Length: 276
Image (cartoon, rainbow, N blue to C red; front, side, top):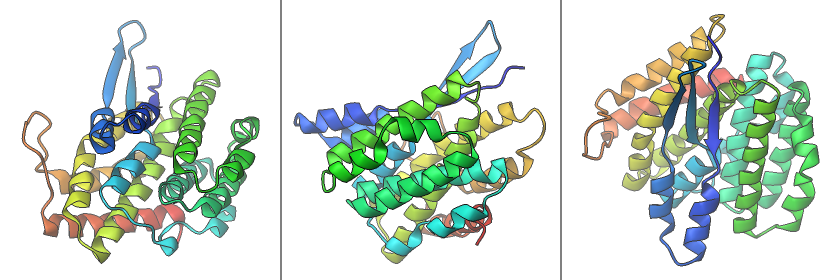
């Protein structure tokens, strides 16, 4: 069986363009954040096309995800990730943290997290992506310009997709995305704990659809049973979405108790990943 790839759409650019032209940002984002499964009959390969971490961060931000500085993963932890598995997951975690900072106009912190991503990318032999784009200078030149920072982050996502595909590492994206998804869910759950927000709860609930596709992608890539623990952990998270019906036309929203229970398990999994 050939390995499946997971690709992160950069449609946030299109959504931002619609907003700039007078459209409704939230509606545009809702339309674009979807998952898609594409099967190639000749290769038995299924591509999972999911939203980028930036898109999820933007959706959560539009729902009221405020900035809390001490929630993000410590940049000092980057030195502790010595296995490729931990490095991939935490590259995703730090990508989500950088997106969170960008969405909340924390430009200096965004630059700091970019430096941390470079450190992790060196361990993953992915330094060329960050160096070739001149990201540090672009971020510094656009301090205070959230729209430009959003475009830069989307550009990074597209470059990473292309790099992984060109180097036969497309399946790596599923592990990186898992780290980013878990971190964003953690941020959303923690901010909601401090100040319960029905809109944010709705966005968290919508992640049931994305989680199903993420689990399926990782399973299809796990020929050597390398990701058994991660799959089990994600399936444990998925139990909190038992009421989700993919075929239903009704909006699915977690109860207050379900959100609290989900937050406990997301926090535990996130702690396991970042090593604190």
